[in-house]
Length: 432
Image (tube, rainbow, N blue to C red; front, side, top):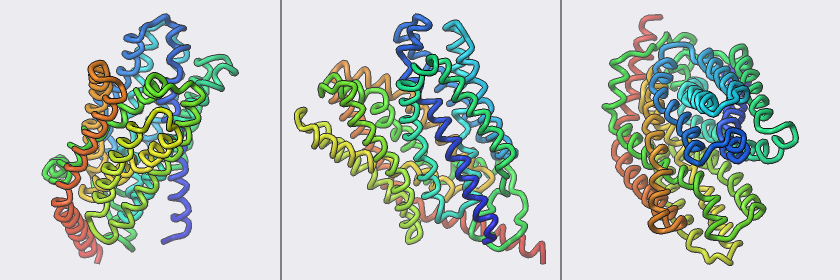
């Protein structure tokens, strides 16, 4: 491989990492700003919930549209546009002075929240199948780190620099800076460039979006399992995100400082799980096509076991509780990078953004349902029991679904590899 290109693709990874880090910071810190924002506009919990639901609904609706655009047009320029939209809509949220206007501007921030499929598919054309899990795991470190950074900005920086509006101006400005970096610094790659069948070829042609290939996404049985697990797999994440801090305070007697000292290390440990899971998936995928699915299966079953042990730990045994939560955090993200890589292991390069967008569309549908379900169950049986019931049920369902995927993945991977080999042979004949 050309050394210049080798260095450049890691430069692209670095830019995308900061894009995801700062974007997740901007997206997730709104939760830590609930009190000052609510006081500013004089709103109740229902109105606050509408603010968060608005961006989620917008993102869900736009996933298929972004996926289509990424497969049809230049992904680098579309990603720059997404970053510019992020910066602009965050700025608008800081400028407006009424609740209806703030509700609309926060909903508009969901436009760029559905932009990740293009990022992941572009990375797939910089790195081959045996490296993608590690790269996706590395990029996804940005999500929990962004959550922590958002908490710091909201709770520590905002009061010092003039309030929540000043923080929005800051993160919005950074979004526009990242947009400029992507526009001038990132180059789109020919779709399929990193597939092993095209190794050594200087020209591989242009594979463009086609409805025929898009229909093939839904004919691959592995994708059926990916879609179904995506719906259920987000339940634990959303339940823990929205209810776990309340559980620690109300049922385990933690104060703010105790919550911070417990959850900050757990979140950092969780961040490492993204990369560990992706790296393990790559390592095992080199030995068997089932590798990524096996690692994902291990992640959900071990996460289930350790979460059960954590939530059934006596309240006074805080050290034991922390250890069990740390172990849960390691395994929770194992499937994340592997699911993305699996989508690209079985779908053609020109429809990968669309495939990923459909998967995210289904995930967001589950994400929208999870908090309401958790709240209803918590009222009936208690918060801790609700978290345990929903998380363990969802992960056990995912485990069963992954077992099903083990029986289809070999066929779908071989089908794609044969398709790429046919294209490579046709290209070789046309250029000889």
